[in-house]
Length: 153
Length: 260
Image (tube, rainbow over all chains, first blue to last red; front, top):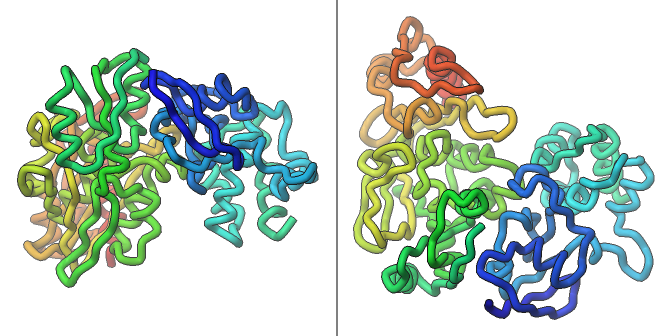
């Protein structure tokens, strides 16, 4: 076992992990931040996406020890003072979810997408979200939500 | 995944030392291939040595070309104004946005997946791979299925891509994985026309017949009538060898048209 320390949602955290402990396991099992989901566990579905030092990454394909010293943001870290993040609000406004399982990863990827493409067209949104799978196939409203958020909510 | 001891290397030299000190260690860059392999228990290293803190990331342009550090992510390459457009487009087409934020140039070429994109770019541009031991020409680097010229304990530090007059990459991505069913990189390089094909065989390779045709006449129509024998090509549930043989020509034509 080794000790890992990082900042998660603005809080300094540390814990004992094995070499093989995945970042998503550390978030869910050590920190009880279960908003980050494990879907496929093969880096395809994107349900586990979090931000590591500002970039969206698949936390099922990253070791907890690789995040030593990193600044991690999960879905739980988006709302401020009881107010949803504009991307979360846009998903709510546009009914950008059905069962909701993919939603945390979808929102985290979408925020990174808009940060790097401030005025994305529909094709760009669909292309940049290709690492996130919605098995309800609710992509149409997800794209509309991202468009709304990109226009400032 | 079996457990292992995790280490963070401070330099390529430190990584080599940690690797030598381990029973059966493995170096890791972005981990976008190694972690899935570990999860499937296809590998069981005693130690995993991360290169993330080894100072091997960065892009440096000079008059002759561009040198890209081994742990530079695909996203960093895709977004760099110092990288030629053809190489940026290769990086942009790898995996998905999250994989591009973590996957690295060095990791990709060390793994040498038969359907990886970067090997075609290295061969197509006549790149040079710099390791902690020596410089290796791309033509000598990709030796077989997941096999490279790297020795035990040899660690990639950077790749230098010389400038090309014209260059482009065209790939037919597998719709699910985005790996290349077939990808073709074409270039008018300093040493003449180079054509590199990935996805079609056990590893990326140059296409001498295509190079000869394009050397005589740099146009898509110069490839009309050329056929690629299917007998040694990859065949799987995604496409037959004959299908891939046809794709090689189609992608080569698209690449030439894109290069202008």
